Image 1 (tube, rainbow over the protein chains, first blue to last red):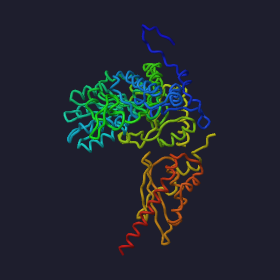
Image 2 (cartoon, each protein chain N blue to C red):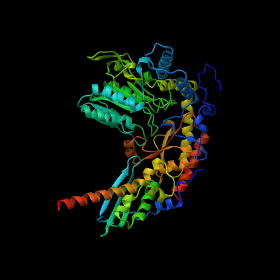
Image 3 (cartoon, chains in turn blue, green):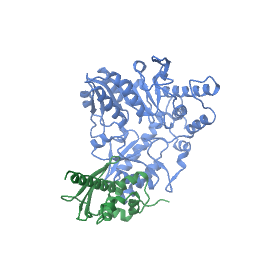
Image 4 (tube, chains in turn yellow, red):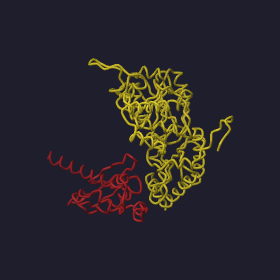
Length: 417
Length: 134
């Protein structure tokens, strides 16, 4: 499909063309075609990313920032270009984006390198009831060391944040607010820009867990005005072992590093050390070089599709899935309506334990996740031990939604005989 | 080809479990859980004078595999000695279930046996405590 440049309308996503780029989709599981509905845990990889990793391992590999020889210069350039691609992708400056291992490491970086330095006894950290463990546990730890308190914004019956409650929690003692952009269980898209305004009005920083947003929608950290933004490369078509952290330049400049060693220094003597420029100050030791380059290629792939097209396609899928799932008896869906959520749908079939549901679906080639989704506190709020979760991405189809529903019907037949 | 994880007999045990319930004044008791999924089981037993498991029961919540395994285990250990139970292992449970299991689901299958083993160890520990002080 082509559109006139004047209209600037996104070209609709061609899912069949996309699927041809993902070699894993030719696999059969228990004799059935693979229906991969667990991208929220990790995404599959397009050939371009696989090829880039392969290319660098076979032809263009060396350590970066050190060698004067050809290979090292090649790889250094490729790695720095990847950094540039990722920072442009979220409308940040080059110096403001650090490569890490994953979202969890990014959040730990903020907790230890910013938190320990800036939190004092009596300070408060405000999180929400729907956070992933990676955006809870580091704060609990750092709060213990500092003598600070952690408080949680309530989630309402629709799975959205209670913003009135948020307003009462974010106050003069709050030093940091940290929230998920998109809930990995409920699919709720949280009002991050509004939370940034509320936080800044109190002289507080806002940290955002963007693991579930950046793969699925355009992210502009200037528009959000968040102070930190953490994400995983492996959830956005990149390889495992790569993630990132955005931090506002002024904040990163003030922070002490997280990990210490080579590459993050300017100079080392027997007496001490001085730090390298941003972002290298926060990348100690040999970086995930090839993985970072792979992430750059993943960003290229997503840019070519266009994040508006990606988002529009997923909204159509989740809307269809919602309609179909609504018609399954005794199926409870958690979280907001289809048009107010990202492509994540958690549910329970009455009388069916999530593990049993997931096992039966696996027998039909359908991969979903069953369990607590690293959100045990949220499970308690929902009043369940666990839930099933289907999550959609650019390579899923409407036919696959039908297969999911069929398989759920089969599970129903077996488990509720 | 796919195999059927949810065989007739497994589903029978899940829906009509053997000795599901609680007992007063058990000789052995332990409650354990699988934190990954919230499956929880409590095993109780009464020993006779020869330290055989005269009466066993379990209660709890969980998936088909964990509850069916618990039920099958109750049937299997009734009348056995503590030593015989201690000999039982992963393969015992797999043989009882009669189907292959992935690593993840083996944890479900082992929950009741592990719980019973812990109950036995606790009981034996308490026994040697009292025999030392007397």
